[in-house]
Length: 83
Image (cartoon, rainbow, N blue to C red; front, side, top):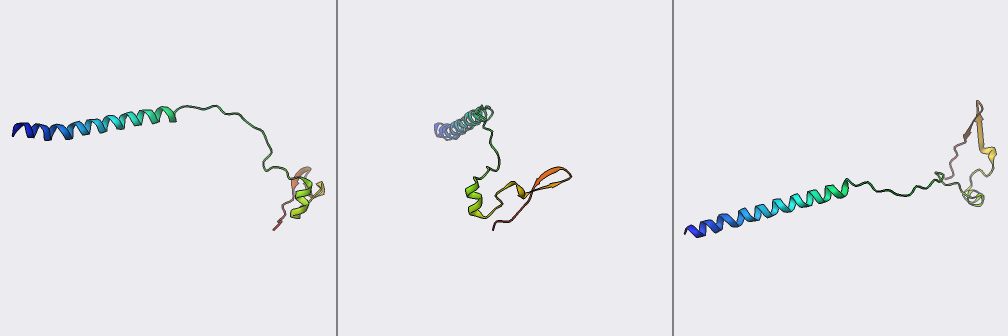
């Protein structure tokens, strides 16, 4: 009887220790990967991309610089709806 109680007590305790150990390992492994800084290349480009003149004509937008409105000497782009 005593050996059955030992086995019944030992198995859940061993499973609990394995589960806690697995959780600790997963936590540490994930933390190590998430704390790493990756270097990536940088690319400079205009946002939004300037459309070619042909595409601007196709969608019906202003084609030349006359759409730029100057106010107090500062150039501003006129907002137009193309829909």
